[in-house]
Length: 319
Image 1 (cartoon, rainbow, N blue to C red):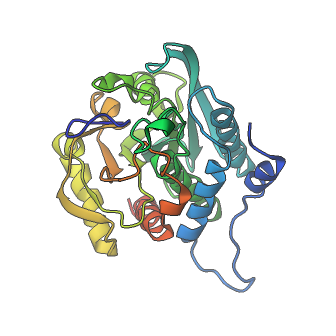
Image 2 (image 1 turned 135 degrees about the horizontal axis):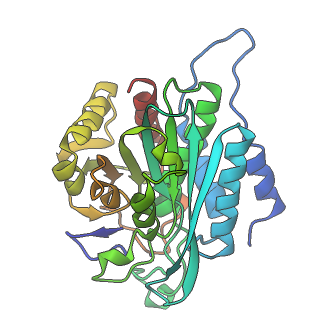
């Protein structure tokens, strides 16, 4: 993503054990006599951040990116959810090379009707171009917060919703090609979401099956001390949805959402706003390890992930 208030957002090794971990994702169970409602577990989400990072860098076209895309699909299909891959060729703004990008849409619950769209980008930036150590700026990101945190929230929501299905439909959208842009060129970012937004109403597209309540993008939501303000594009072009989300957070007592103005960030919600679809970006752009090699699981927090996940789960069950 790219912020208009700051510089642009500068950013196979998967062992069999990783595959086993993902394929072993199972709903958490309670005692045989218990009937507690499914809850969002921040510790579980943090485990999913770590698992993604163990795949290595996940820039478009990389083995880690492809493996994560496969694992998202496997996890969804194991729970009986529909999976749709939206793949297309693009040119990387950083390298000039052609690369295949693939967005993934996982549809949960009843088809049609009013439904939430929840999104996160699963790619990572190919370079750590803001690293304080100049010798490391060509290294790819691990992307624990910038990439894995939002994906972890959606993956764990998938687990929770398999235990307690939603009354209305939900589409989880995993965007590719979000973070490969260059300085001064915001249109080099969000390649996957721009392509998907352009065809989201086309016949055969799963996003065309119902009426969106709105899109909520979760990006960089895992750091300790998380403080998410009202992102400026969201507030300007989707004020009702933004207020609804922040009001629900206040009702739930979630202090990681701070009800104050924030910077404008060119992120995966913007192409949908341009299509007239209400969209909100939940992002804390004040992240000291942004686009550096310091963006590792060590700087992430189960508490932060848990609050964001709890908010989305509540919106799903109480739309």
